[in-house]
Length: 85
Image (cartoon, rainbow, N blue to C red; front, side):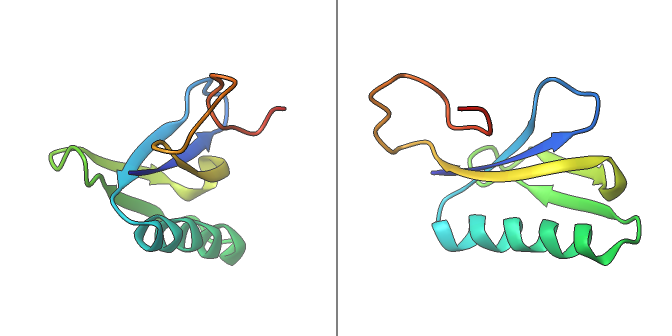
């Protein structure tokens, strides 16, 4: 399972959705990047593969970052993947 985290301005906790395949997660990641690069404010609507009833709608102007992480991957240090080292 792959998680796409969207970091929202002034919000300490990321908004997350999960996708079953790396390709689906990469497609969501690229879509968010395209919207951010476009410069116009849009509403992004995303769905989660793990919890099918989970839906996320976010105003693109409020997004400050996006990341993909593999939640099944080994993580020896016990730290959640993220932006800070």
